[in-house]
Length: 213
Image (cartoon, rainbow, N blue to C red):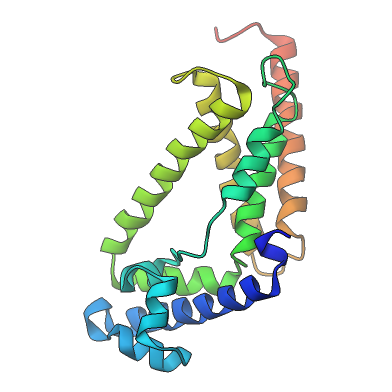
């Protein structure tokens, strides 16, 4: 059974989210130096020792970087889907990578409230933004390597970078739409809609031109 479907895992993720919510609220109100890990633990109803089973630091709690978030199974499944394809660059590659992104977001239970809390915390402590960007850059580099492995491409092959960069850009647009007030569509539906539009744009453009002029 995948972790996301495991009741015990879901319970632990809810505890991690309580800690993150408390840490973000206190950061927005008091700044990072204004509260302690013990105060977060008291609010969430757990021990200090238990806190460090979920987060390596107070800053990680604010950013939501929980140690529970192990996506090895999702990533290995994505990599294995390229097996049997001579080049690995199948038509399904962008869709499969997009599905991986959506699965990651779904696993952490992202909501507009969670994002609003994070923005408020970063407004109070801008130095958290550089840590967040550093994490995003590291994730992009790791995903390029994952796509290379899935597609059987050599290191440095620009096609792997393009897949990650294009789909990630679409993912950012999808997230903004998902978080808009009044939206009722799930992330998967939004992503599929934008992928379909992108495919139509690229197919039309490539059909009219052999390259840049």
